[in-house]
View 1 (cartoon, rainbow, N blue to C red):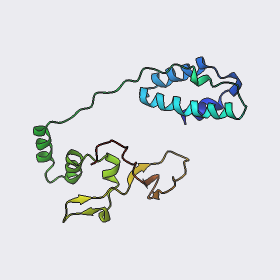
View 2: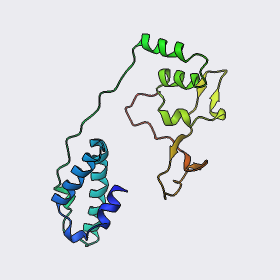
View 3: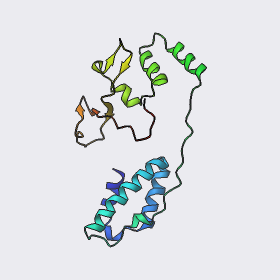
View 4: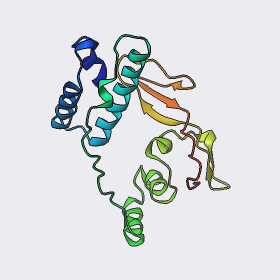
Length: 168
């Protein structure tokens, strides 16, 4: 989306690292996180590498473009007492089970909302992650392996746990 509109606005031969850096500054001014800008840079660089390979341009200007420094936001982490207070306050709420899963399972939000009854074994107190609830961007196709739900909502297969990552 960000890259398409940018590339459509000028011929590849007129693209410079300065124009790419201006795109990054514009996206930052629009409120995009530096992580999102780094993702845009990666997509743009990949597309321009393909253009080099296809002989459409001689060099990839994104390779010379400076990206804004990556800024990570501090994550709020509740301590044990705060979690107990949260669960006590959530008692009887229609989302009580969600609060319990969020605070005790390590599951991602999309994994929790992707749970189906067939994935849950109340007797063994287990849940199997078989899908993640995701909203498709406008005009995008349903990804391979996804289950189309309603509107633009789909269940996509979960991301694999990376080697060396903590199992959940």
